[in-house]
Image 1: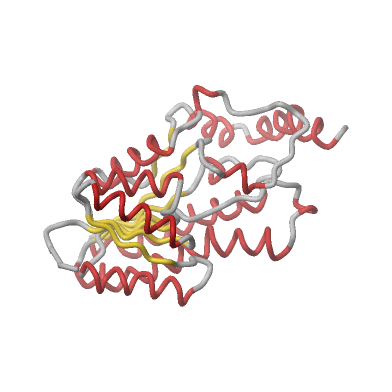
Image 2 (image 1 turned 30 degrees about the vertical axis):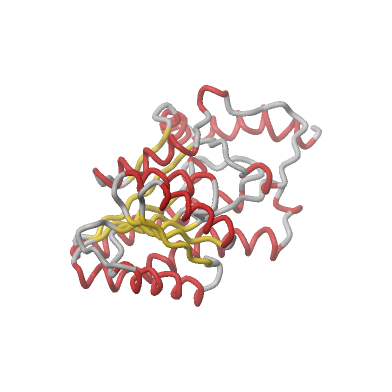
Length: 269
């Protein structure tokens, strides 16, 4: 595979579907060489073929972000293929939305922490030596509004996203002197297969209003916006930032509202 130093390179974890795949399509269309990483190799290869048929350049890499050796191999293969990594998009993640006492210690709790938080930390660690050597790079971490506003049944998921926010703040202050940017994106509800794997079972009919539900393509555009104009944080849709602000200013009100409209009906009180 040819190495073209002038073409930027993005490494995307969780690239086999949803936000990751949409981001890969958008960045490939905007001149990026795209390293596609996920566990489902067949889907990555299909996406690679799609991007190449459209004139893009892509590389499918089977990787498990819950495994440190797999992460290191993923970064090494990208560097061998393209010579450098301009942008790491830490997108891989999943959620189990149940009451804490119902979560399995390994499959639900440890697995979320390992994938959503530890995996992102180790991926960032793996790309840093190359970025520091080149005196430049950008790491974009996929968080969630749950990284600001924790809701019932999202206890462990929210913990990983809050952790990712703290990690990103500290890392930005560590590596900024090397001209490495660190950004976090905080989307609200997105039409992905998140709910399919979350294990959620609701008695109430509460859901995010359709007008506020984002598509993977909308999130991908926000990622591209961050790549072009790096910022510390981006909450989307913008109106969701109002909920974050209110919960920060009036935490007692957030507690009361969520208990009244969700916890009590769901718990059967």
